[in-house]
Image (cartoon, rainbow, N blue to C red; front, side, top):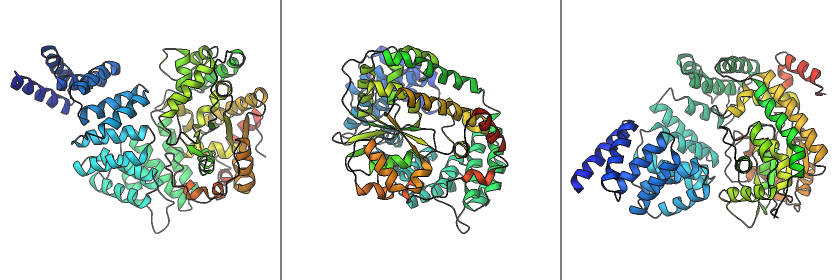
Length: 525
């Protein structure tokens, strides 16, 4: 019986390895049917179920596999599935158990690294990514994950070496080229422009062309060729924009719903509101949010939890809507009448799995929380809210120059200059609403003021957050905490002025944006 079952398990494993999920599911289901106590059968069936989108069914089978045989491979996959359904606490607990029985295969170690990274524990993730690379050095994904984490941890030279090793294995790996270009400011004697141009010219893959185009534009900018860089960027963004089914009306409808829902949010019950005082850093992306995060997290009483999805998910849960997106008009309107105290408690529970020192206040620096400022103010009465503002023209240019999560539909506005400008107009209007209805709750910091007067603006920032002055906040660039945003290289330098009024280098290209802002009542003086 055991031999026959083992043979069928081997066949199921083989089907999984070649990507035949239907065969894996069929063979594993037979194993479990014949012997409900077969751990391997439950494991393979769980992986197959989750692979076709039935994640909760996958969790049930993987949980049973772990009960029957608590080996590391089973636990690694179970932890991964928990993160897919946003059960980060369960994922963290499973990972802790897996550390006592580490899996021997590279994929499981890489999976553990991915879960740790998802939870924001990049030092723990690195050990597993490095183990995966040692076990399977020819795997491109494992090498890329290792390099990303080295970059997050500020180990730039090691990240660079890891990426060059990956590119040696796969010269056309666009993600590796893109990350490599971002590690440092390139120089005339140290850059990859020629190699990037060659690879870009021979790449037919749309996503690859986008990544390589951004990398090439970034390095051209570094080398003092801004006009050529923007010309390249305009071309690659236009090419990608043509593939998107995006209309600004989609985002406008969400802004409309948020504004219309404020009276309901203001009147909603607040039962047992938490007394915790997290700090939210909000604003348009690429406006200095990471800089402020580093200044605040350099304070001895504050830690950064990174960019969390905890508030959007807490609001989604309160709404109970079954729409496919986390944020949409129906969800906002439905959640607006919910118990705000419950939203606050749910947020804190979700955020707790990303914290390292519960004795310190923590930062959630997800910029997109500007949509949720009304919920935050009501659900967490002691929270501090900091909004970064930047010159409108520089905001448009910086969003256009940065490649966000390509698969996220929330950033589809960022590939067209006028669509970014339209998005900024609605952001500005929403911030005016929060200024009116939440007097004193949101401090608005101008990036340009912070650059011009670091100490003065830092003192203003800390005072708003109820924090005593700490000299460490002035030397934020020495903060060795991980940085998992595109600003990783910049915030490890002292404050610099290079990015102020960058838009003026491109006034001719940006003239349509200037005219749009003029018609929309946005001052650029």
